[in-house]
Length: 496
Ligand SMILES: [Zn+2]
Ligand SMILES: [Zn+2]
Image (cartoon, rainbow, N blue to C red; front, side, top):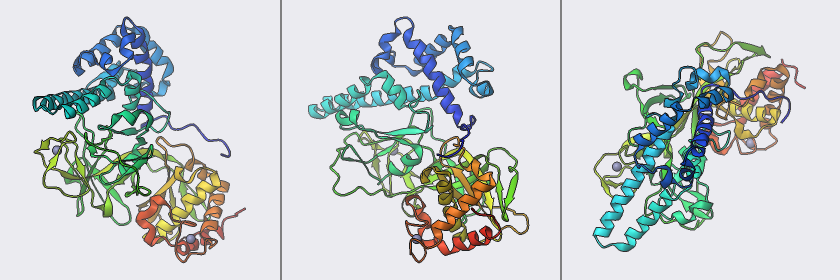
């Protein structure tokens, strides 16, 4: 990587990272104190009371009784973030261990699982189905005998990596014995596609497929309404009435991850497992109210980088969305009349129609070209510029991405703007560097190189504009359309 990258933004998304580091400090002290070292060993010793409210208030009491904890936290957390995480007013204890906390949800979810497995095991035993009862018992023990540290990082209470911020896992309910050597943790951006119903992944030379989404009692998923048009203009709201027009849909974030069926049996991959779905990004606006100021190079207007929201949606095959039961978590790519829970019990609830998605807060720039009004040209130009920028900055192609957004542009500029963003939670300082003229010129030059015809295709190919993640526009990508806009600009701009 060339040049100096400024440190990632310490706001919004990063609150989660900071809370995780705070949990790490507090739980570390907790396990060192009194006789608690035993509780650090295994999940069943940690959850000893089998009562989420009891454990939550135990943690609160521990925090309140240790004044030095707060002093240590005030030292490790940057001062600018104190109010966001509750260190300014004492609400940090609730943020870490209260009913709305990650901790509370993870413990409640695990205890729900345990109770469900115990009841199924009992049923099998009553029916004298001993082999089945033994299988459920093995699963139960896998949950309870898991290492506490493993449990806390798997459920994202403790930090595992600095980034990504949002990792979830595909929980294997069936043949758990092989689970220790497989990693089915994914960044949410991958998980919403790879663990969607009907999609399969290969790990440890086996095929894995989810049966549903994990839900936690008392922390119902927040479903949002949304709508977009063919230019990618995006509206969203918690309230359906706030979105007008046709094609209003719903999505939610599978923040607790996904799970297989209890009786899921892995298979050997027959051929390379197909990844069926891709995600599509939509621009939701800059996080701060005002539009950042722009600079103009060679007739192209580019804003300074600022935090903005991208909504990353996984809508399934031909945007038909998924069927999901918000009561038991079962999901399906198609409509099904009756379904069973992941534990194999009949479920009486109806499945609704949802997409999976999440909000990515990252560094964004808005770029406006003269006379850019055509959607196909905008996508072609946008991807050429995203790829050209990653070449110019020397960063991996997947670290930069693009979305479109219509604007009321000042006269002379097209109505469709390109939203270039760092495809990394919190931003990584990549697009920020484009506001320097020589770097922007270099990005345009590299973009021109990509679409100038070295690949030899008639419209677009993997050598110029296509990639796995822009499949949804492959049919409209056209390198000639991109080239026309780039040439018009580079004529004016001094390009090295
Ligand atoms: Zn159900
Ligand atoms: Zn090509």
